Structures are given as structure tokens and as C-alpha cells.
Length: 339
Image (cartoon, rainbow, N blue to C red; front, side):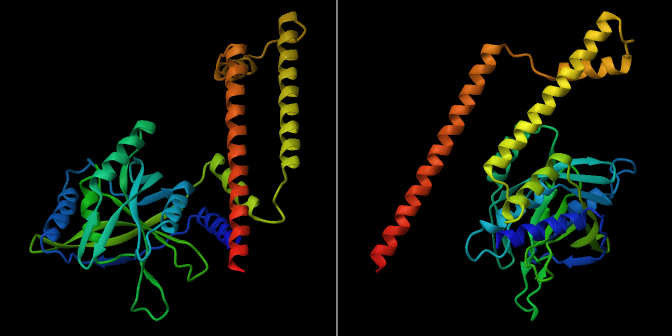
């Protein structure tokens, strides 16, 4: 159920925040004779770069929104699809990579051949960069591939075609791409996350294959993300679900506290101006920063914006109620016709 899945997701994020570390390596040989030299050669060329140009990545930090995007993509996958892939966006600081966003990329796998939607990937990347110009392509994600030969039903994190996809993203990234694998099989009552980097396997200075080595991974959530996750989990539980009246009461309490703080601040400023209280430079700077952070909008403009937003909200609520009514009528008709 959605409640159990949300609770499971919350436990996994909490456990991941404890900075679990796992190590290992899984080879993925290139099955395509044409793609093998180019993929391994690209990685080998980067590994031979001059010292100081690029440090080796040793830590990967993933935000919860990335995990949610991967799970949503996996849930909406086409029937019969073994796994889904997508592009990872973020930033790099030395040997640390932070993954802050992701989007799905269509692909198809048949035997040792892989087809990737290159044009779709570039169009989506251009749209994401317009909203977040500081993000760059850090690598790619994939869900674990079910292993038909495993009697326990476990999944493979690295497939034979992973090297081919890694080769594609090696040309999209400025540095060596990171490969993030999400195991959605729930065999161990957990959503396992693993991060890999690729190193070439050379024989007589000839790159023949790639080996994926696992690196440290941690899930990090900002304060806003943690609030959203807690809210999502609470809304799915019967005990923690809050009614509209509770939400209205909480909003009223919040507004009353805000008004009280504003009155306290105004009273302090008046006393400083009258000379009854000595001025504090630090408090003055804090008040100035808070006031400067508030956008200056004329009252009539603010009223118009508020009314427009309220009308939009009421329209969405109205359409939602109409949709629920139509679904209810359709169910009743189906039951009547079925009899």
C-alpha cells in the first residue's frame, strides 16, 4: 500500500542520513564490438589527464527529490520494461558530487543493443538549465534489473548494457559520469541506493572493457525537503492525518505569532528612536536584512495578485470536485450495468 511504501521510504532516508558506506566492484563487459573501444577509451583518456585537473570522486550526496523522481519514473514505466534510466543533475566540489535533480530519459534495450533518446535528453537538459543554470550533468541513474536466473529473485545493479549507456553519458558530462542505481525489488524490505564510477580494463594499453566500482553514497535533505517528506508521510497515515480545520487553526496560530513578532520589532525600533533603549548594531542589521528580503509591492498590486491566486485555487478545487463526481457516477453506472 501507499502508506507502507511511504513509511518504508521514510525509514530508508533516515537510515541513509546515517551515512552508510558500502564498497565493492561489479564488472560490466561491453558486448558491442564497436562500442567497447570508444567507451573504455573515453574513460581511459580522462583517467590520464594531467594531475590537478580533476580529482577522483569519492563521495556522492543524493537529495530525496532525486529518489522520488526515480521511483515515480519506475512506477510509470511501460509494461514489460526491465528498467528505467535518466539523467542526473547537480554540482561537483572537488572529490564530492551532489545530485540535486534528475529527469527521465526514454530508452530501449534488446540483447546487447541500447537505444537512447538523445534529442529528448538534450531538450530536457536545456529546459532544466533555464530554471537552474548552475546545475550540470553529473551522470545517469537506473533501476536495478531483475535477474531471471537468480532463484531468490534478486536484481542486478550492473547489467551488460550499462557500459554502453555509460559511454553515452561520458560524452554528456564534463567529468567522469556517476552511475546511481536504485533497487526497487524490496527483497530486503528496503530501497537500496548505490553509486558507481567506471574505470577502464586495459590489456597491453588497449582498453577492452569497463569496471564499475562502488563509492560512498549518502542521502542528504535540506530543511524544506525534510518538512515535505514528513508531511507526505503524515498525510498517508490514519493517525497523523490532519483535517482542514486543523490546518486552518495552525495557519491562524502562525499568523498570530508573526503579528506578535512584528509588533515586538516595531516597539523596539520606536524605543530606539525615542532614546529609551540603546541601539544594538547587530539587531539593527538583522532587522534591515529581514526588511530588505521582503519584496516591495504596492497594496493594490498585492490585492490583485492575492485575488487572482485565490480565484485560481477555487477553480482548481471546483474542477477537482467535478472530477470526483464524474468518477462516482461512472462507478455507479458500471455497477448498475454489470448487474
